[in-house]
Image (cartoon, rainbow, N blue to C red):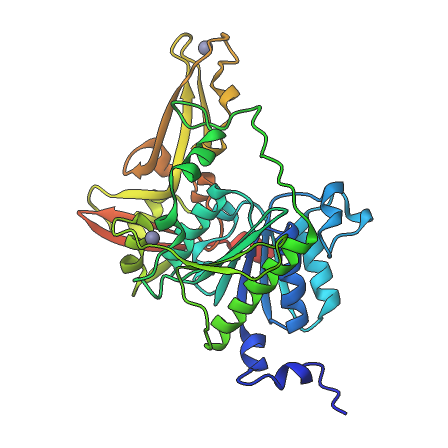
Length: 385
Ligand SMILES: [Zn+2]
Ligand SMILES: [Zn+2]
């Protein structure tokens, strides 16, 4: 008898427990799929797991989330799953991150991952995750579920001739993404509610199992599944599955990120420094521009009473109701909106932290067409930890 707990795994041909122990993976979304993915990763002894979710546990999560208990209602999903994964397998290091993937998980950290899991429930989150993984140059595995069927797809920027999630997006995807936004500014509709998806643990457990199987194959370098393809599992008609291949879009903007990230070198700078300070440190003395990863509303100006409110919020997080002027009741305020920060503009003297950038995010300065990349470090949080 062997008392190695991984004994039965190690008997699998071409298995390497060591590779799994050393692996770094990120799980985006800790709902039904995320729970199942994490349970599998814990049992397999995958060594380093980051879990990212901004949401808290509600009662309806309990019927399909193996890691949640009745007493967890109201707590952050990411925190609870991290505790439970550690209980299942103390060998595993888990790092909970509370926040949205684009504001809380820097692309510098993402670059270190062997693979990422998309366990999210909207096209918008998938589109963002794809863009970030293609920037970071790491493969990601998407899972999608409803009550009757599920699907799993692998996207890998290291195999650029294969399709990515953005390549396969069609008008239905964009319509759903835009449904939550107001025209013409793209702000969040205050009364928007995410559509409720009917689903059961049968679909999520099957889909998560395939997501993790594919991830293990990627980590072990023993892939039987091609990037740019999708498994389609009709769970309520259990007669097998279909495999589909997505078509590469020659004009895909996310594919264009692949060339940029190769040999990308970064300078480390503090998240508390200002764009001007960083530009000086980089030796940029011309007309430089800092580009943020998302469109940003710096301030709202009322055309009627002239009131100016600095809001410093990404466009996608501005609520439609914020366009009302609190001073004079005017129903519209003009946004000062850009993803760029120019030399000598007032915003260039604000700490980088102001712009919703997380620790380990990568941003770039451009001057005369030359790009300089910086990765942000957070010295304060490190000292406090
Ligand atoms: Zn693409
Ligand atoms: Zn006003």
